[in-house]
Image (cartoon, rainbow, N blue to C red; front, top):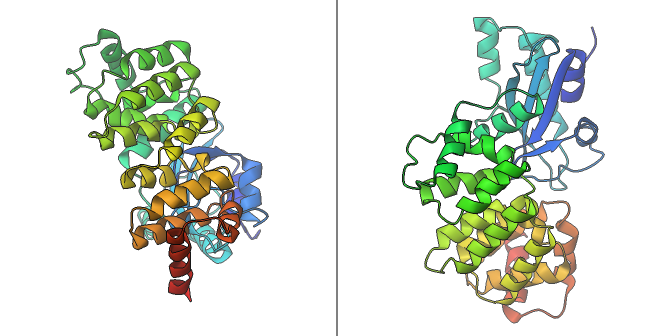
Length: 342
């Protein structure tokens, strides 16, 4: 009997079509080659969240387009490398329950084994809806019935009549934001949307690289949103999470950091969702200085530990720690951070 040593091997041997998605911070598709390298510990997991890799595995037999979904949470070490023992344990539980045929309908006993898997987690409603939308697009399945409902709502411009809208319809449209018709609908409507619609829409858009017209509309809305509406600013910033490298978005963050006044919750949003903007030593230094100005050592420690786990940010943070030109407050915060770990 062949010993199955990885999730990639398990999926390949079962003769399934499959896709892997990162669900930790936002939803990103991981190529099979990339994920295989992660499993072999050749590269660290790109976007750890709370010390774990949060993975969605969608798989289906070639004759079917009805995917099964697993949501797997695996621990990482301090370098961001996958805990091999935990991964092997997950694979062992699956093969004990299902063998190598992942698409069979499990018996009651097999179902019990699967449910007792300690590495399975349940994503939020919004992430699950967005994943379903992205996956439907990927396998060329039709969108949900709520898609046309949301399109009609945006087209009719009767902004307070949102009660019939489903979250799945919002994510279906967000998944198709690259299409001209959908991006135009969002561009024309985003400044009018009530909180109940804007919040899930921004949460869905954070997973997509946005077209220029949508980016422009969001940045305009950010500029006119008063400081008295911090939740709205956070939502709008979230929507730009996958577009942080766009020159217009990068310029917005440059100006934001140089303003020297950023609400603490906004800083949390930036570190948790818009970390891609922390792409230079200067930008991270500005961010850290703003963070310590809030005089909240616990928050500084939590955000620092969260950011240092991201492979692309880790070396920049270490450069900042060696930087001599920093405020007394930042030097003190870094010193306290390492004293607390010793």
